Length: 300
Image (cartoon, rainbow, N blue to C red; front, top):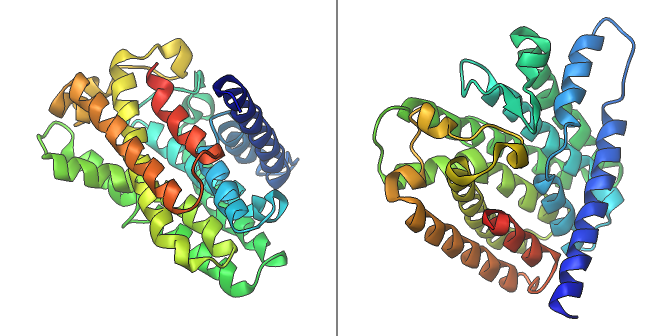
């Protein structure tokens, strides 16, 4: 397959994945006429507001490597997107990053008010575990329980939330590179880890978990460093969010610690490490390798 044909095939597959995921999310959280209609609207506003759907796709791809169909793995894929959407709602709040724009639209708290946004985030988090539990219709209860435990750990105070704690506590204070990497591994990498490992757990392929964890860790670091770079060099109209917020909020990033050029080198290095993990999983020259490259190539 030529490079052009492979790129076209990847883009078509990514488009198909995103369309299937959007439809599944819409079904998982339907419009409802009830006393809670406003908070449901806010939940749907954030959940169905677009995005790359990386976390859901990772669930589906790692499940596929274990012979699991998209339909079977979709409840867990949707759960990961719900957790991610909840985290973005809370990240944008004035008490956190205080961002008014998300994916080219007003942030949830701007659109619906802070109280409703807070409840919408809480609602998405709890809905995520209810949705993931639907996988019990297709898989042994032990597999689904293992997925739920991994989701809880990766999204919790020693995972994604723990990364946000480090982020908040380090604002305006210098930190070393080791602490910054730890923050990124937790804040971004933990949910990517949950996505990859959940696919393995559904398929009962525990022997692949360590490699999946390594892939997610390297991917998460590369992904977040690219975000750091784009916060300096990106176009808000293309990114769908403001740039320069890291500097305005006195945040520690790879760019502020090491400079733009060095940050670019490190992002590339972590991407290469992630690709080597895919080779170990037998997924070289696959959709996953193209996806990994595409996330780095957001810089171009």
